[in-house]
Length: 203
Image (cartoon, rainbow, N blue to C red):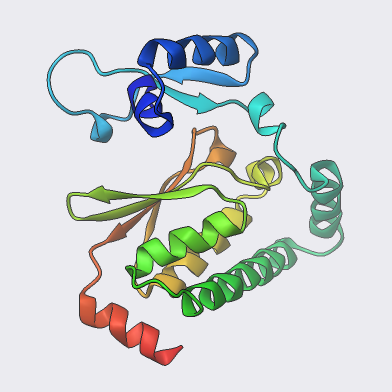
């Protein structure tokens, strides 16, 4: 996010927000980057966006990254890549089950992409939903397995496929934290209303 957006979200002055951001950048928790071209609007030089660094993400809970990496490396060496793919798919299916259950139990009448976004946030992904010209984009600002997924992209691929199944449409991963991006972004083309209704009716 930019300093201006943060000041609006937190009801603080832009100057006050920038002081906090400067401290976090100096501590190595955040870094300032040029925004993606698709997110820039208007004239003039676009404001820098602030994203969390690997050091900053360490402040969040990570589930035994070293142990997970060692276990997956052993699995690949002793068996084959097929075992890694099977494990990634099994994990994604579990995530899919939890998201489907959360969406089904949602009491609010919201769109399917928003319901999925809220379900992902509940699982620790700190997800937000952005409107795009021809669709929407789910942004996951935290990834609990970022360091593991950086070495085993099968995990990200299986997760993307699971999101596609939950949403009932083709989706496209535009960026991932595991590959060094600030967030994981998943683009969702416009979903017809009748398609969303039919999917909800099947659950």
